[in-house]
Length: 332
Image 1 (cartoon, helix red, strand yellow):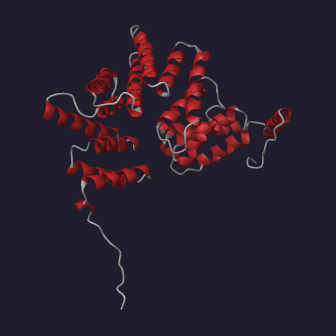
Image 2 (cartoon, rainbow, N blue to C red):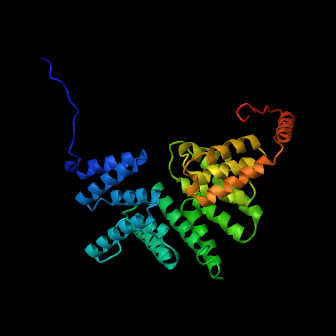
Image 3 (spheres, rainbow, N blue to C red):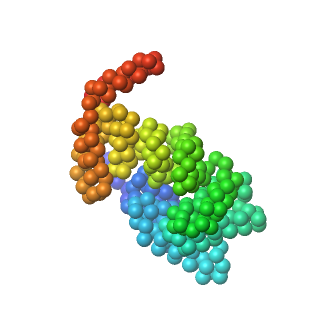
């Protein structure tokens, strides 16, 4: 008689740290956050020296909006290393991660410490200055500093030269990094130089558009911030492809959802705007976000006032003039 094969159960708590880390990473990528957290915790319990696991665990928590927990994880890791060595050594990434979650002087100190560790690592040969990740991290650190100076310390006259210096250093560290151009856009907006701001944000949007589909170098928050800056400079059509990607990948990203509807409205794509607006208003939990809910209702009211046929005729005429054929079938 053939022996039947039952379901195999594994005692995951007996797995070695590396296997637990791989399971955590796999679940994080698949957006199975609860499972990812569980495996990260087990991995770190077994091997507190697993630096990458700590960094990814903190990032997993941050992605879910669990900022206080993420801060606690990073602070404990930094303190543990300091108690062991008596110096601020170890993985520079934790300092940069923590800096992103903090404000003001505390954030600046953490960014500066992270930059110092990178530069020391390059000097002593433990880090390769030609490594694309190292270059990118250094560039992001300078961009992070620029952001703090032109948000938390915008009112101080001495902040402006620091912002300019940090943006320049960020671009020098990695000319391909988009963070510096995002901060440059903010800088020009603060200077009320909209034309230069438009040039800078276009570099960011073009860079995002040219990225490979599986490239996760820039998270949803970065892309959404870029889209917001496009709206600030009245470039409403520019962020639409980015926003569409955000909504397709996560239709619970209600801010991106609303912005997509709003950008279509501002470009007179009223049918598409209405489609997204009504779809968003149908979300049962939208009212939990009072700001987005109110803005979406107001957008719906504005759309109800529009002459859709006139907008359609205008767009059809424009398409014919350009030798293009507008497909309205999916909008009506």
